[in-house]
Amino acid sequence: AWMQKTLNKKICIVALGEGLKYPSVIRWPFEKMAFINQKSVLFRVHSKLYQLTEELKELAHSIPMDPITFLKNV
Image (cartoon, rainbow, N blue to C red; front, side, top):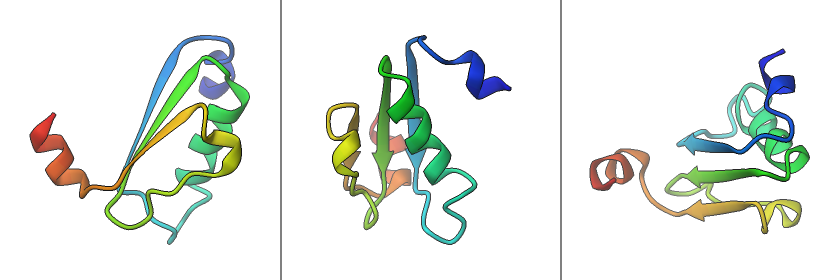
């Protein structure tokens, strides 16, 4: 229900260190939200799994960095 309320609104999605152990919990829903909502921006911060799909290249930014280091520098 919350995700439906974000449609057509500006939203910043920050994915900090999410891996592939349970991608259906955070990683894929965040990607779907960013893809559907053209006003959103996704920031993916991960030291190894920072890659983005082709569909998200215009809507997202990948940051190849450890999330803890990233938070300390922000």
